[in-house]
Length: 122
Image 1 (cartoon, rainbow, N blue to C red):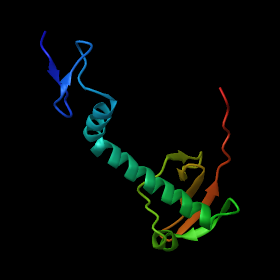
Image 2 (cartoon, one colour):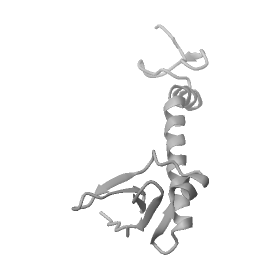
Image 3 (tube, rainbow, N blue to C red):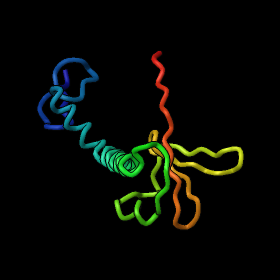
Image 4 (cartoon, helix red, strand yellow):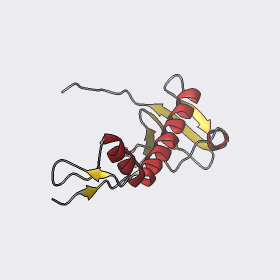
C-alpha cells in the first residue's frame, strides 16, 4: 500500500484513499493560505462598505437631510463602494450602503436618505 504525504506538513497520511491531509489543523492551514488573497480582498471591500455606512449614519441620524461631497470625503467616504443602487421613475439615482443612502444633487450637494429595512423570516 502506497502512503501519501500531507499537502501541508509532509507527514504520512493514513485513512481514506482520497485523504490529502494528516489532520484538520493542516487542512485548515493549507486552505487558509490558498484563499488568503481572496479573503483579504473581500475583507477590505467589506471594511470600506462598513466605513461608508458608519459615515452616512453619523451625519444622517434623522434619516434624511443634506450634506456636501467635501464633508463626506473629509470623513473618508469612498463613493466607489456601495451595496446597491436604485433609479427612480424620474431618472434620479440613489446609492446605498446597506440602509443608508445618498443622491448626488450637483457637484457639491448630496441628499441623504435612509431606507427602512424589512427583514422577513423564512
